[in-house]
Amino acid sequence: MTDEHEPQGDPAPMRAISRRLILPLVFIAAAMVAAASWFVLYGMKGGGSKEAATSAAECPVSTAIAAKLAPLATGELAALAIHSRPRPMPDVAFAQDGAATSVAAFKGRTILLNFWATWCAPCREEMPALDRLQGAAGDGSFSVVAVNIDTARLDRPKSFLSGIGVKNLAFYSDASGKAFQMLQQSGKLVGLPTSFLVGPDSCEIAVIAGPAKWDSADAMALIQATAPK
Image (cartoon, rainbow, N blue to C red; front, top):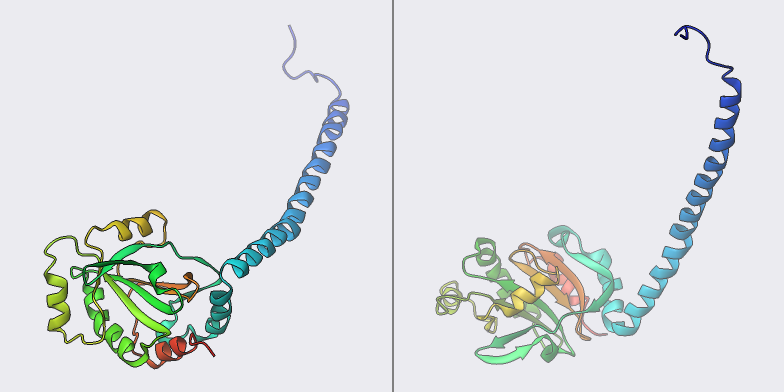
């Protein structure tokens, strides 16, 4: 019977074995960290350059506009997210006074593509400012395209717009809800209102979730900077 207090052997050999096992693992871990660092510094950098080149090739006009607008997203438009690498906007379909149209129909001009509903209180509050923006800046190179997404009681949107004195906005609608669903499924649209700034090459330059003061001096300066020189 062995005494439980009796030494069971010299621990030195065990420590030596442990060191022989641990040291290679340390070197392996260090190599893995170095490899990961190389990937982050060089691999991702290369991927970013490729993505930037793709963006510039697909969306040359919008890429140039985005660079001009970046310092202007301040003040009342501080929440506007301007993309450094604009990408093509999905060609969502909707109607203009009952006639079928889509984002592609506006190619050649910059649009502020806004989605709103009569049951959305912030949308209702924002609409007069969008109307004033269209009145002040709407021309052959820029338009506000405010798309109503009510799918029931379809008389309400026009009645609402008339009631608040809207006089500059054309009436766009998505009574089927398909455009809204398409943008939701792509992760581009979560709630209302949401506005996309889309360039003349039909590429998404910027997006803002929530209402904005589109008739403010900040908004006017930003929209004027999208005009072709």
